Amino acid sequence: MGWQQVEADELRHSESSAKNVFTAVWQMQQSSLKLAPEKHVDAYFSADVETDGPIPGPYSLLSFAIVYAGSYDGRRFSRPSDSQNFIYRELKPISGEFQTEALRINGLDRSRLLVEGMSPADAMSQASRWVREIAGDRTPVLVAYPLSFDWSWLYWYFIQYCESGSPFGYSRCFDIKTALAVKSGLPISEAGRSHLPPLLRSTHQNTHHAVDDAKAQAEIFANIFEWEGVLARVGKTSV
Image (cartoon, one colour):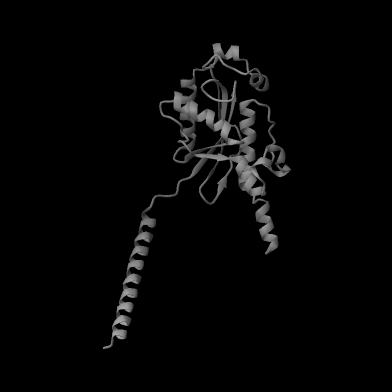
């Protein structure tokens, strides 16, 4: 037997061994998939906050609303039948600092809240329990438009005042503004609410009351989630 034949036999043996290894790995993966638990289902919550300044700590969270906004299992999005499933709380300020312009916009009476507002610990603990109860065995995800402001306030308050921490973890969040930018083919700088096409707008008015604004966000979120988007339509017409 020549050296060429030896090399050929070794090559065939190597290829056969590689195929056997690949087949074994593939079978193990298929078995593990069958044994794997069911997929996580996201439960979405639209949130809006009203504050007396730009950042938590030096300034205070005065009110917030969290509205159940639907669920997604990786294949199908289910929007709620209405927007009546929500929690709303008004809180005592935590510092003496405030911006007059912020109070003018949200219309909240800071002096009244100093007397009547709920303690941050009670408000955040109740909100955390409510979110977890509504979510059940689903995974809670916070949504807002834009996300950064509402998330920063709620996350800080949950971590600071709630013993169980944030029901949304440290990163389970969805930015409606980014979703609009992606589906509309717009830069973020042009994805504000003023650029929403009529079919995506909410029937709820944006009043700077946390409940109204959170409900409006929930509807916009569902509309955008279900919308195919401009780029999807362009792809279909160009084929």
